[in-house]
Image 1 (cartoon, rainbow, N blue to C red):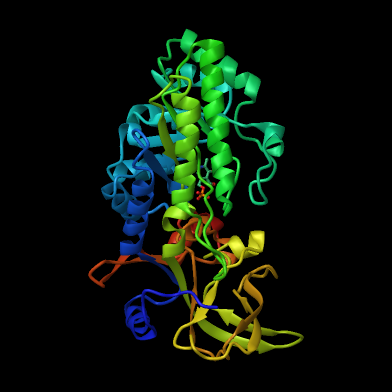
Image 2 (tube, rainbow, N blue to C red):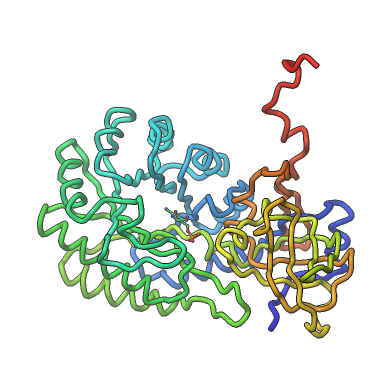
Length: 417
Ligand SMILES: Cc1ncc(COP(=O)(O)O)c(C=O)c1O
């Protein structure tokens, strides 16, 4: 089974002349089109907003593209708040969903006028003390044993996030007593989930809670945020999540529960990352070595520091050997990086065409949680990020790290050698 590519081997060879591998390449037109499809699917929803999860692809050029398409930013740290600001996203177009948050991050979020989504009941007072309580606050709900979670995120009752059911009812009243006037409700219980009914279940749960909050406290919730977590088809045989099905069913639940209780309008919002950019990024790498011992290995010039998901979750990323798309896939390889860690493998026992040194390898679906999860173990450097523009040009949107960057936090002068 194959996955299509928006470029040919000849085009990538041209790019490599200027920008050596490894690098991540993002497909702008596909990202724009995808953002438009999401907004169209939820056009029925009053004030629908997608706050792109900046942690997925923290690059200001990507954020600017998404801003132009009408998306906001979901930030989880000071650096992400600054990235959003630099991309021109400000005020309530930013959702600040963090946890274990330091005071200076709350202050920056407040200064930007971001919507602050609190992760814990004790943060109401902490925020008040350190930044002042804004008129609008949102709380992250953790349903505990009421929901199942999924493999990547784990069970809600084991997760460190959010308020319990009892705390959330109490939290809104505390915030109101302290002068809060506008309120939002957030949750995120799954990650990379392909089952549309999981999101529909989340929406139903939040709508029920909106009604319960009103009935027990008299507080009206202005928006619900279903979090991120919509999965993407990493495997060629998997299907995209049907956004229209999700939208239709959420609309049904909205009409029954929110309109039925006379609580409309409640704005519907999300903070997807992976589903927005994930399928439209590619890690491009060159084969450095082949090794034949007890198994057959193909060694790339990229490693786990450029894409951590296979190493940490055993996640599948499809691999194409450029120019050999139609060759028989009759060889079996472990495709590896160069870290001194045996989980530094992009694929294990993968059927591929016969590979030779110098082949160009494309690792698919690296547009989210790819470059972003990079690290420097073994002195490995983060790669460049490139953008394939709608006119076919390739733009450098982040240069590769250099050894000078790597050493910039060290002072060799104090060594006395
Ligand atoms: C609070 C929060 N929101 C949104 C996201 C984005 O998730 P995804 O990229 O899977 O949609 C994450 C991911 O870690 C998250 O922790």
